[in-house]
Image 1 (cartoon, one colour):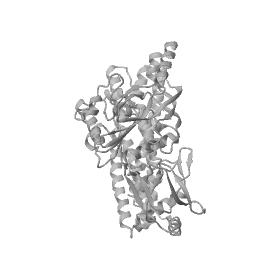
Image 2 (spheres, helix red, strand yellow):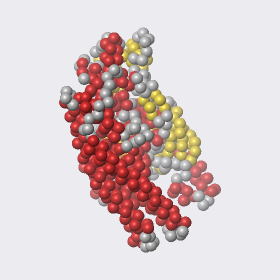
Image 3 (cartoon, one colour):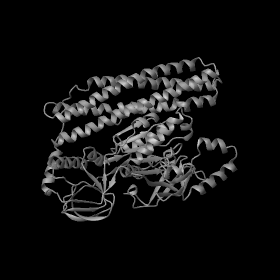
Image 4 (cartoon, one colour):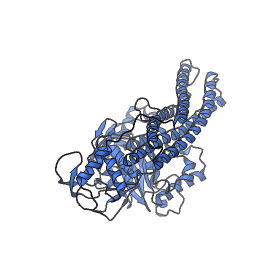
Length: 575
C-alpha cells in the first residue's frame, strides 16, 4: 500500500482490476522467462504513459520497493511486481485517486479510536490527512480539499453532552451530508457507523432524511438507508457476504477475531445499502464499564442478558456499503482498524474504494523493451545521498527540542499527580469515585495524547519521526540546492509550514503549563468543596482539549515531512 500511495501522490495513474484476466508478464524479481499469469480483482495496474520523465519515475519507485518489503506490525508482505508484455484492455477498472482524508475529531470521538485509524493508515502510506473539530467541519470540509471523511469510534453521550449548540450540530451534520452528496467518500467505525445510519431499530426517525435530503439532519447523518441496534462488546469471526466488492479484494471469506466495543449491528437494510459481512460467531464477550455497573450485582441476570445479546448479535450484518447521491459509504460496526493485518487490509480497501471512480474500460499499449526497464530500474538503485548535511532545519530542530522538553516535563509532573491522587485516596482525603471522574474527564486522555505527540516529533526507538525526516531532507537539500529548483522549493515550503506549526505548539504549551500548574495547586490544597471539584474537572477537560490541538499539529508535522521526504527523493532519483 505504501508503494501505491507514493505513486498516487506523484500524480501517477493507478487502477484496480475489477475482473480476473490472463496477461503475459515478466516477474521483476525473477530471472524466469516471460509467462502467462491470471490476475484477480484487486490487482493494481500502473500503465506507462509514453512520457519519459513520468515513466522513469514509475520504474524508479517500483524498483525501490522491490528491494524492500512492506512491514505492518509483525507481518512482512513481499511485494510482487510484474512487467506486462502485451496490450492492456481492461473492463470496468477502478481508477484510484490520492486519498485526502479528513478525520473527524469532535467531542464524541475518542483519541484512542482516532489513533487506531491513523496508525493502520499511515503505516501503509496514507499520509495526506487532517483532523477537523466540530466547527472546522462546517468551515473546512469540502470536496476540493478532501475526498474522504472518516468518523472513528466514540460515544454518543459524550457528543450529546458537549458544548456544541444545536445550530452548530445541525450545520455540522448537513455539511458532512453535502460533502458525501458531492462525491466525497465516508468511512465510519462503531459510533461513526451509528452516525451514518438512518436511526436505531424500531425508531428510524431519520429515515425520511435519506429519501428527502432537503430535510435537515440531527443526530444521524442518514446517508444510508438502514437501521442499527446496539451490539454486545465481544470478539467475533466475520463471514463475508459479498466477495466481489472492492472492499473485500484480497481477503478471505472468513476473517477472525475482530472487536466490537459496544458498536452497532445493522438490523434493516434498504435497497441502496448492501451487506458486506455478517457476524459468524461470537468468540468471547467483553464487559463494558456501563454493562458491569448495570448487571454485575446479579450474575444470573448478567448471564441471561449476555446470552440473549449474543443470540441477537449472531448472524447480523456488521459491515455495509452504500451510495448517497454521488458519494460512496463504507461502515463497520466493529473496529477492523484495530485488528490483524487481514482486517487492516479491509480498511485500506475501503479508503481506496470510496475515493475511486469506476471506468467503463482501460486500453493501453505503450510499453518498453524488458532490457530498458531493467537498465533504468537498476540504475535508480545506485543513487544515494552523501553524508553532508546542510543547516536548513537547524532552527526548527531547536524548536522541536524545546517542545520535547515540555512534553517530558508533563510526563514527570503527571506521574507525581497520579501518585498524589492515590495517596489521598488511601488516606481518605479524596473520594475514589471523584478520582475516577478526574481521570475520565480528560486527565488520562491528556497524558496518552501528549505521549503520542512526543513520538511524532522524536521517536528514538523506531526512528520514524519528524526529526529524522528533516535530517534526511537536509541531505537532499545539500545536493540539489544549486540545480534542482522544484525540489528545493518543495523543501523550503515544508520548512516554512513546520516553523509556523511549531510556533502554535509552543503557544499551546504555554496554556498547558498554566493549567497544569493550577491543577497541581488544587490537588495539593484540596478541600473537597463543590466549586473546587468543578474547577478540577474543568481544568482536566481543558488539558485534553489542548492536547488534542497538539496531537493534530505534531502528527501533521510528521506526515508532511515524510511526504516531502518521499516526494523529494523520488524526484531527485528520477532527475
